[in-house]
Image (cartoon, rainbow, N blue to C red; front, side, top):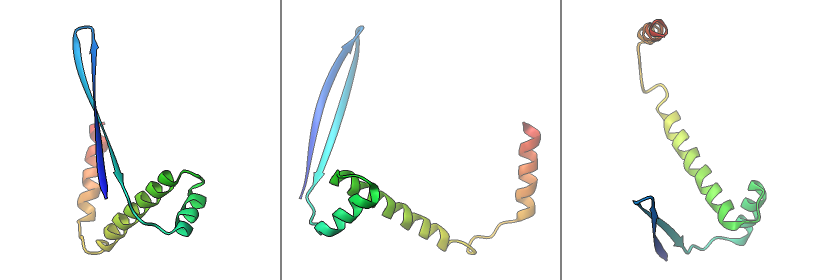
Length: 93
């Protein structure tokens, strides 16, 4: 279950008008208590939300790196051309 709460804040300053919108999203999920405790210990926090968010961020980062590493040896480039371009960049400085 996901619920989204939105707050609309209006600020008037020196005849300027600012609108700030803050969106808070809450999601209900079922996670084993043991894995949550392990995440809290790994991330050094007793804040469940912070531990879970950190773990998800790390999982996403890990999978992105894994996808990037899968491209290794699939992309070819001319190393001499890269060296030439780097030299040209140095000369521009």
